[in-house]
Length: 373
Image (tube, rainbow, N blue to C red; front, side, top):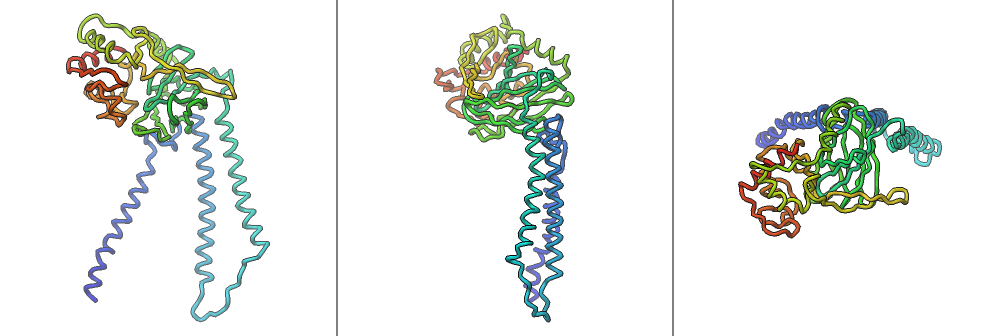
């Protein structure tokens, strides 16, 4: 008997530890400063979603409290007692009760549906001409994002810059498989579907940096298909546009010039450097309302102003010389992709010949890309 009690004691002793662990896990979800926290809205669209979430949450909480209270009350109030053999009164077939507990949930769902449907339609609304919306074409690739600004004739990869306080209207499609564009603090998700154009509106209340993520499984490197949105004051945005419109400078001396020679041999099969290399692109067709729109998209990220970006590998790593050196040596060692298509050291990228990049060539490419601000 004593031995059995002794064997049970460790389980009792571990119960407080288990409760503390559960509470710690629950508390970890209460942080409000996480970079992809949709409950920390930073724009009007995200705020609408947040307001709807809390409305439904408190309605659901009220129902939970009422139902559980009634259940606990009934459990103790009408439990069978030892000295009571009274037969329990059955309510099955009580038409009046069944009508009541059918109508009440229907009314609750109808009440929730009204603001839900209204919010969905409002979020789908195209901006009015008076809003002076900035149009950005968003194209999903395996595994990176292309952002084209048709009004200014520029494009970037994985980092979108927008003016704070101004409406931004996105035309979203895909060059290969289904992706999903999502910036939790600015709006909800919108799928990027091959052959179709979807839309999303972004507005940032104030300058800031917002982290986004592909939210639709799209292959091996899906988890590393990230992007950033930088909201800046209007004057800074205009300055950024002017800088981005400048062509890539061709170096004539030093390590960067050696990198330029390597770039022309190795990189120009897929990458663009506007003003310095022939444009490499392909057409992607998106349909909307029965009409087709042709997007001219890059085969690989545009590198015209690569040095001005903050990350590499679709937001996977911070832009540093060490990370870039590793990336140029073997991208798949940093980001899971298709090794036979991305290993520059063996030259197996899209069937190209063996590059066998030396340390000197990699250093030259780094100097060149760093100079392209």
